[in-house]
Image (tube, rainbow, N blue to C red):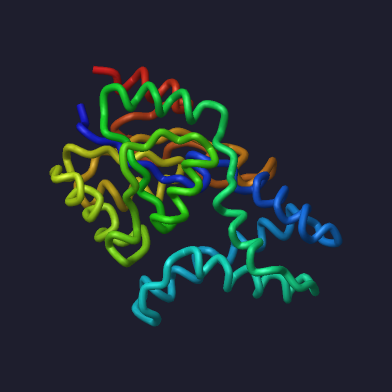
Length: 224
């Protein structure tokens, strides 16, 4: 049984697509807000890849989100205010997340292992009521998942061996990277993260240590 659970956040814990679209619609009513949100998210991995590959020094995700916002706004033919980038601090948790986290917190240390900065994850937790014990993630390693250093930095911060920590995610690739660094793994699907036409991560692609239907089910399966 793991001593700590660390969680992917964007997609696994929160519905970024609907939430970001809501924020965009309020500020840029002239655009297709959902299409804008999807395009903004599509810039996420390429921006981090330049850092992972060594082409750029570490830049917190808050700043990448702002840069990507203006790139997408230009493509949509609009001008977006800088503060729209804080939309990523106001993402609604999936309905099972907060009660599930509270149940898991009774038996385990729980913390995010997100590519989001400590500031972003703190504000997002305050907004959504996510009861983390502490905030961990990419900023500790000054690198981005799926680099091994991110998962290992979280374990080191908790003074736990990787085998005592479970990575929880709705993304098979995240879990594969965590498993390679020695962590336990837990998967549950978020089949509408990318909308009704989603084709990826609809189910587990490997025999993960735990496979659950949602956070409440995961809490039951992880209860000692």
